[in-house]
Amino acid sequence: MPAVLFAIIAGLCWGIGEVCAKAVLHTGKIGPFAAVAIRTSLALPLIWIAFWIAHKAAPTKAGQSIGALTPKEWLLLLGGSGLLAGALAMIAFYISISLGEVSRMKPIAFSVAPASAVLLGALFLGESLTPRKLFAVALILVGVVLLGLKPTPKPSAQIDENTHQSTPPTP
Image 1 (cartoon, rainbow, N blue to C red):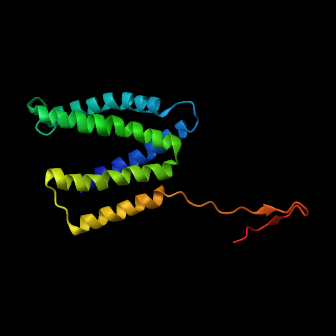
Image 2 (cartoon, rainbow, N blue to C red):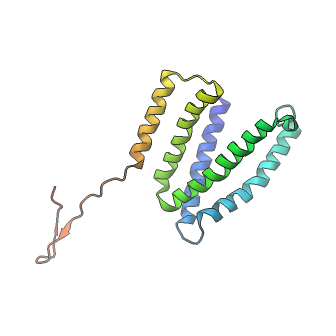
Image 3 (cartoon, rainbow, N blue to C red):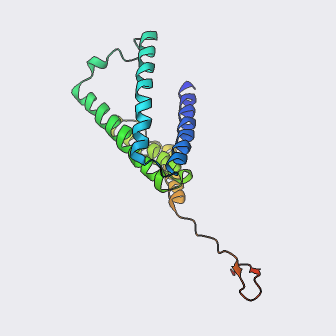
């Protein structure tokens, strides 16, 4: 249950954070690269402080074996998690919300992530890939497609030039 609770907290924080970021990006005063740089500049020291506190409170759980990481593990952590998820994904996401609606871009980005994690977890980590998980991934991807489709605009009422009255759109 604590894992689910922390996942919910993370989702709420990301949802609120991205709405705030979109509100600032929408002003046109700052671009996505600067927004990511500012966000990361604030987050990084706080993350190191949290690591230090956790390490002092429970050193056996908070990274006692950082020095024991193999070169492959460092590559996975720095390349996959740091470069791909930490930098490139954030830059791509901030570009997406600077160009599109956060109410569409956020669910798309954060739906593709779990779908790809389920499939990659099965392929590379040996995690189970049950029919239930496959069905859930399919539902997620259908939702992504539906969110990605541009809605067709409703026809607007037309103004009759002779009477200057609004006429309803024709079906």
